[in-house]
Image (cartoon, rainbow, N blue to C red; front, side, top):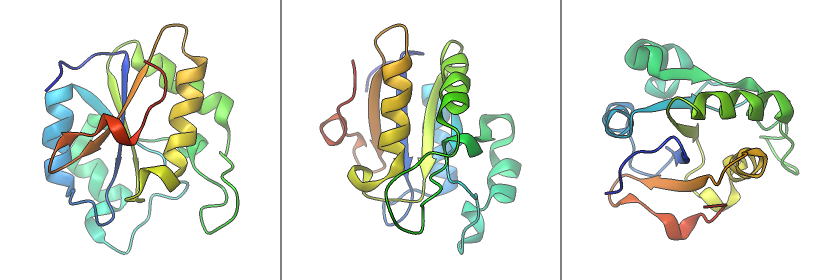
Length: 148
């Protein structure tokens, strides 16, 4: 596995992907990463993926970024809530540590986190690698190629 770097932006989707909050937390610790929940509304039918549970489990490693949420998450084209503010926040965090963008979507190719990750990578003053995390295999760089 590659060494964590502040020039790496990770993404993870939990639906049908095999992640549970505890195993994703262990991976985040290995990467020294902050989990940034970019769901517009961090609610879930699955209690352990609700904001309150994640915040209690992850503590300071969890942050909800409403600004990078998809206002059309129920259908329609991807539109980020406030991309300028969200991107600025991500770039500030990436100066200190890696970030894992979290959403429910298992299919990274159809998820708004690709749009959010691309916005961050395109605004970054230095090359930024984007890597999709897959629980069984660790990293799956072939699923997501943005920057780096």
